[in-house]
Image (cartoon, rainbow, N blue to C red; front, side, top):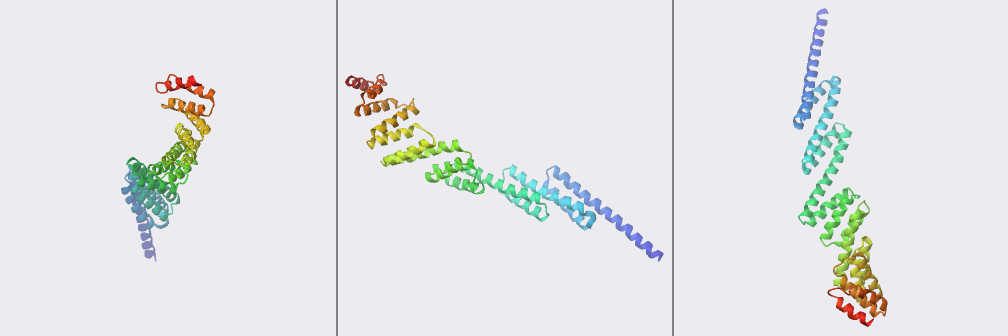
Amino acid sequence: MKRIFLFFAAVAMTAGVLSAQDINQATESYNNGAMELQMGNNSAAIEYFQSALTMGEALGDEGADLVANCKKAICSAYLSMAKDLYNAKDFDGAITAFQQAKEVAEGYGEAEIATEAADLIGQTEMLKFNTEGKAAMKAKDFATAITCFTKVLEMDPANGATAIQLGQAYMNSGKLDEAITALETAKANGQEKNAAKILSNIYLKKAQASNKAKNYQEVIDFAAKSNEALENGNAYKLTASALQKLGKNNECIAAYEKYLEVTPNAKDAGGIICTIAVLYQQAGNKAKAKEYYEKIVNDPQFGATAQEQLKTL
């Protein structure tokens, strides 16, 4: 019996020595992985951590802490690799790597890392489409720009800056109604000033198109929307011209006067002042006609006409 007891004692001592050796070996592999990770060698780090994980799992309860640390380190290394691709602007590669990091983290029960990876997938996709959209705009490939900016807004509907870019892409494509919709979204999401400027320009384009088609009431309506978005002299000038063609001279005078108020240094100011004077004269308002003719008596182009008309008033 004594001999048998000694045999089992020897076996137990041998097992203890082997267990200690295994723990030391697994710990060394883990430490090597940590060093590689610190140096940015993520692939090499993962190999070391995987080896340490396998050895740790074979140790049972004794290796439980090591296994937990290895799983977290492996997930962190995968996430770090994905971030490196993101920083290098390899967005397609980064998206694939973040997806892999997410799957590995979910498999190892690292919920925090899985959540971070999932968030970064969305951020990377938005940056990818936004970058591609801007490049397409620069290349005047507005169809591609529209596709890219639309995808960004699908992921982030309150992204006012992207809505502005989408509006510009639509406008440059001649799709003015779609541009207005995008710009209204931008306006509602922190881009009021930028959106207003572009909206004013779009409605002005619509007014100009209506003027070309001789649809003068539409000219007036679109010009009013242009001024509602952002007051501008050209909208008042188009309005005045349309009103004059419709025979609404009193309203025409008011629009021309507003044009001069908004653009006092307009190159055609002399001609506009002469037109206002003539309209007042036709309306029988001699005082106002005289007032406006006197403004241009020294004008090189309209001065002679003004001096001649003042003699009759």
